[in-house]
Image (tube, rainbow, N blue to C red; front, side, top):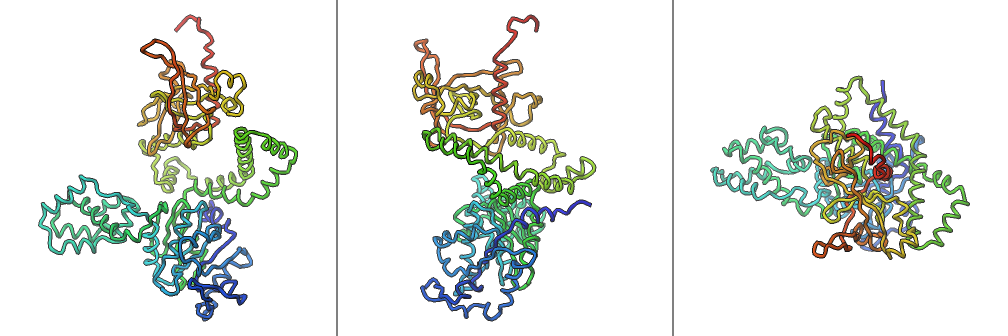
Length: 588
């Protein structure tokens, strides 16, 4: 029998935990233990005797002992949040988002036990940080109430867009065409609250449940039936009521985008997830180990295999970071030569030297962690693999909610996959091989070798001929339809790029028998970008009035970027194509 999926969650998310910070105003701090005064927000000393831990130290000891066991001793710090009184001080508490696990008390204001704003502000800051944070909200209050407060506080305002003019007109028509009972507004207000709002935020399609009256929309269904509201108005009326609830709680919603991507409330297990963090909720009264609560929530989330793989890789890089640095810096001679080049180089050349070094070290780091990550991936695959294709497609659907047995979803998956392997995030500080831009109404890709586009390496001859302009060659790209994959997708002629919610497809020739079309461009300022990825190019064009050639300038911006290995392949293939051996051959 294969390993359980829980084992891989443990290895990717729990095992890498090294440090824990507890933020709780009832916990003892080091200052209190040492007898030092600690100032509260009013400037007076905090009397530790007023804290609950003095009366019941065992509850605190149980939590501390969990993180100081013989099996695994964590670096543990305790913060009583006495100085976290405004946003500046929350920002200043850097160690709160540099820890691997944060245990956060729900109520951090001893003067108001119903006030959770401090803990919510901390969560918002962590969800906006660059570090993926694991957070356990630990509380004596009812978990349903705590979950509701946190989810509302982390969702951004106007998470759901306003009704369209057409939808708003439908709502007006519903009131005009129906004899609405006097108590309808009050009953509508009672039928739509947090559960209905959260359901629609999670997935707008859930609003369709109002038609069948299932789950959280049963009361709304009965209300519409009793009011004899025509079913053609139900969805519009329901959405209008949900948006009214959003307006009602607007002050509680976050002004910043905390990027909440998913959440779940399945009774005992509750969690909220964003790209930057994962929050679960634990009751102090249950006396359940906090890590067990986290394990249960992570298992309920059921992270996708691809996320597990990336989490494992990130943890391995962090764990082996010092060893990697030692190996990378072991050769003093090459490092000395590198630093000498930096000291003697111009600003432009320095950027390129740093870029090359960073790329080389990143590749080295990936090589170092690859064996461990590969082993992890192989074990994960073996644990999930089934005998036949249909069962394996079902496994994929369970994790990704994508049915690859469906032709339409398979096509979309193939397009997105091709864009992922073919394109890269747009980057760089000058025009280089693989950059795609628009000029003169057409789309072009830079196909000059990378070494020829580095500003500091422009030859003296080119500088004397073209001044501060970088001469480079670009290949014209031809847009293709994106509603289906090209039949000959493996023909080495197509490029795929993510374009918002769609995939853009380009072909490097205009047709099966056509030759590639190239053009020479001259980029101002040696090809260095201004205003992020914008630059100016010129090329020789025909003046229709004088029938003479003249240089025409075009403002450009890099839109996409081809992965370097694909760009290199394109450059090599283009070189072979333009040779055109056999121009005088006979035959078709």
